[in-house]
Length: 151
Image (tube, rainbow, N blue to C red; front, side, top):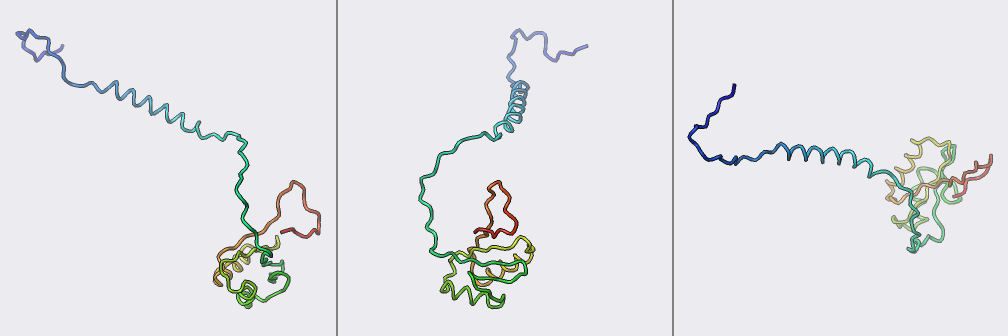
């Protein structure tokens, strides 16, 4: 049982001036679902053969400065053993006080992470912020027992 509020004497079939937004909302929701499904598909890794860079490699120092942490936590700067207390003075003597020189830090595999961080903190406290960690490249073959690590 419906009720009509219009009077029966209106002869004009009046136009509705309201916008029906229901189809618009339906279209927006469908587009939202399409983008939600398509976005993860566009982030899939695709194997690509990248071109070789023609940039010049950075010049290496004539003789890099290696600081080695042995398995018994002794420090070796280059080829000479040094005490932890003398680390700052020894590095300053080798670098001539140049704090921008890169220090290559290598450690035995048996050295605890905390001990390695203590050495890195000592280098940072001495003002040497350019520290490079040295490791072995993985060539697929296991290193021979007793083989010396290559820098």
